[in-house]
Length: 233
Image (cartoon, rainbow, N blue to C red; front, side, top):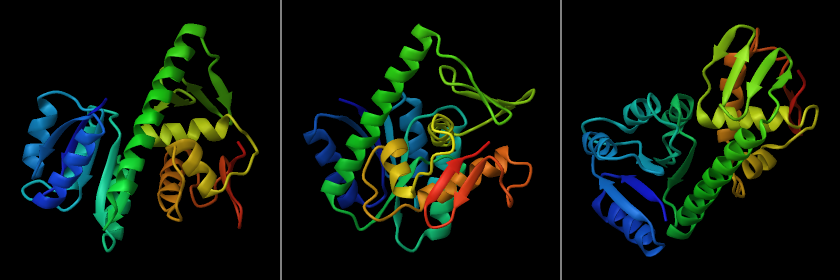
């Protein structure tokens, strides 16, 4: 069972999502606008946030930004198909993924299960790394500490958002191997891509902007035309 915060201003959709989550055994908090969302979060952290972009009072992008200032909680945005720009901005400021409206409850519940499963695997991995003292990874000028989830480039610590770190760690653990966007979705996000992989290039671009000397001509994370991405540093 997880504690899930559902932030959606449309009453019927909010109620349907909450009902489906409770039926699966989760504790559910709901909010109809951005102010309520932040108040609900302040009452006690959740394990997952389902966050609509178009909210009254404080919009979803600002809610996402504020949550990311203090937490690595998984955030899945609920977006309209026409919100391409906002969706990309949301990913760039720290959302882990998105689901486009209209969506089926089966699709959303499958995504929730995948996110929570990935969260549990990550916790196990961090615990295992801490207990066994996993070696710090040094590659391509980066120093990556998996147990502390920290990345240094020289003497500078690079602030990565949770999913950016997960993506980088996966790539550096498989240097020179090419992975398609679909494979990265399955291995890093933890679910089948179902044809929508746009979250991957957004995160790749953000990593390049933080790690590369020249993001337009990357030397660490390369694009292999027609195939995918690889860590070549």
